[in-house]
Length: 83
Image (cartoon, rainbow, N blue to C red; front, side, top):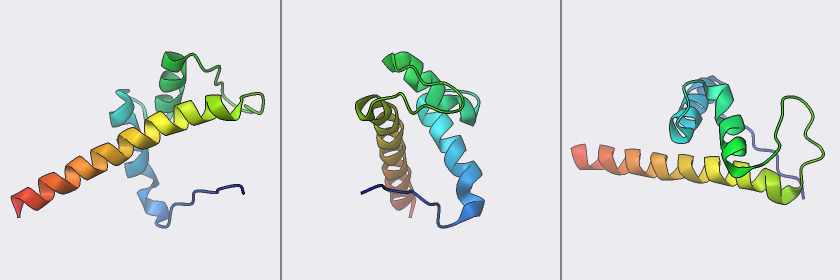
């Protein structure tokens, strides 16, 4: 089954992109996935990437998504400690 991740609050797109860039360690949000792909040796390019295997695409998405989740958990724990 194809998963289609959809942001429930469209206005949050920029903040999510900034978090993605922060986790990946890049300055520009749009460069985060390309830098991660380059580090992992995945041939990701602008435009159509239908030639990527599921494993290659998962390496990039998993690394960014996992890092984002860890960072969000850390931020939530920090906020709870402050209260």
